[in-house]
Amino acid sequence: MMQGGAVDETAIGAVRAFGRFYTRQIGLLEEGLHRSAFSLTEARVLYELAHRDGLTASLLGQDLGLDAGYLSRLLKRFEAQGLVTRRAAAGDGRRQVLALTPGGQAAFAPLDAASREEVGALLGRLSAGDRAALVGAMAQVRRLLGDPSQEREAATLRDLAPGDIGWITHRQAVLYASEYGFDLSFEALVAEILAGFVRDGDPARAGAWIADQDGDVMGSVFLAPQSDTVAKLRLLYVEPAARGQGLGRRLTEACIAGARERGYRQLTLWTNDVLTAARRIYAGAGFRLVESAPHRSFGQDLVGETWVLDL
Image (cartoon, rainbow, N blue to C red; front, side):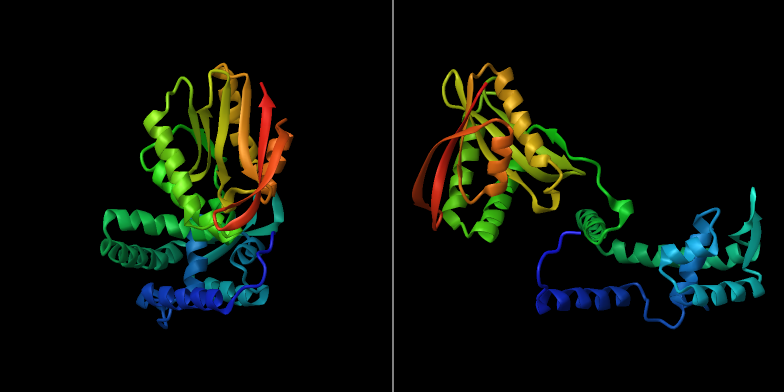
């Protein structure tokens, strides 16, 4: 896993504070979960057994991250209470498969109902938009912390949609400020370029490719006419969360293909030498560097570069 460097105390404190807040919200500090006789761990074991077939003790312990000895004692107690049964797996008598008994299902049912009721009440305080935002944020947390069930489908490339122009301007301004120290003049430039693209763009001559992943914009690139035979690749960017997946290359290739389809003979672009990842993509796609010159822009001393691809 790629490491992001030293973690500051503010970030650590924020995560711990969220954990304390959320455990209070869903009642995890109560002696019995949902005012039942079961602890959080016991309820979670019952939940897994109620929703999954063919579980063994080893698989259950692995998935829940539970100590084998602790889980064994818990399961023996459940068996003694008539909540859980074990049987030999079909075709492999050495494996013992766990299942809830009718009594275990009856014990789990009120836990499940109470959980649904409490979460429903929590969400009921929110507007529909806020509920969607909360659910999306929770999915994002799970993805970032490595939950394999939340892995996203590959991004798709689509045309511009309402809201994209403002969002892309915002994200490019934020990312270039944090990663390269660019000032507000860069945001103004991006806004001007995109406003002109919408105002003057002719679909027969111009194009836009937006990388969409589960409804989130993860990158973009634009094709703008310079003359009857020359077009310009503009504003390629990829969100940090989507980098390393070849998305920048896909966007660049889509722009090149779009230029060819529109009959251009040459595709140009202007970039800066500090954008090393983008420069590698351009070189890999066949662009050649034809000019470079130092300049002072966006609050930084930079070296601007012009690249050209003959189509």
